Image 1 (tube, rainbow, N blue to C red):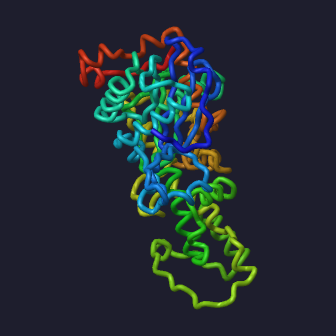
Image 2 (cartoon, helix red, strand yellow):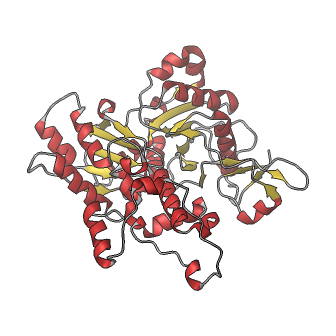
Image 3 (spheres, rainbow, N blue to C red):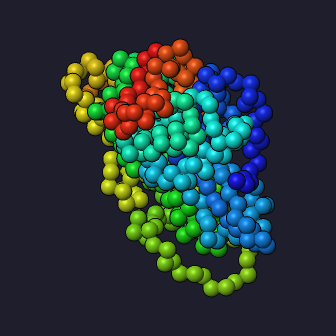
Length: 420
């Protein structure tokens, strides 16, 4: 299958013995693959697939992840946009997932479709059994892997930071990801899934909201606001306001003529197109004002984009209340070790705002400490790599024989243990 990519193919695949596991962090935004025991993944690319046709020959090619934009002038991309295998952090398009895995194994250096190494792959919290079953079927029957283990990405990140003294055995892992946000309580080093909470809000919604606001503000540049450019603007300039209302008043004091648009106005694409006039220097400037903190505010107030769900600070309180045991001392230990991981926790002011929000919903005097992971983006893969390299790792896997003999019932009862 022809691939177009700037990612170089690894050349040392044959030097790894067959018992060395392959570690995959299968995120909704990025795909990371590498070898157990190493500190960094070998290959990282965006978890999307595009299949355009060549304008001259009509040949269909597969573009996985990152690509050279200069090559796209030779291909017709109007009928084939980027596609993801995920729906709200759950893999459901396994045809696309097969393209992703083909490319990942190929860039890792594998020859042919048979993979003779055990695989440890991440998944979301409380992943549906059907999704895990189809992923097992894909890995066992298409690639012939000898054994598979599934683990939660946020849990691997929490345990990795726990070993480095960033958080404790009892605590909360808050993971604002690409299109969902999860909160996972940990007791004695193990995740308690009955206390997990999730909302369908994440970095995707922040970028999409910023793209909408900029397109309304600068209709002349609407075609230039590509997803990649808006993503870069978001990561470079956006921040979390200490309080949204006070930050908005601050902008009004700086510019008395400033009037924030209502959410109803922001949701319309029916703004009037100005009449034709000569372009000036001002037409080529983009000024980011209230958008810098208004867009990431959706993580705390999803109602801004029409999603009637709880914000990330409120989710922490809900997660604690869901725990089966009501222990005041345990709750204090949980709020004393709150770890933020995931790409959407990199905004300046995120930890301070979250700590203030949780303090408002907890009893007076409750100890609250919010810390950011050592590397919110790569710690999930590093934690999984360390576990896959441990001596106890083979006991956490299920083999191809288990899959064919026990089927979905075995997958349904599978539970990864994170304490080594």
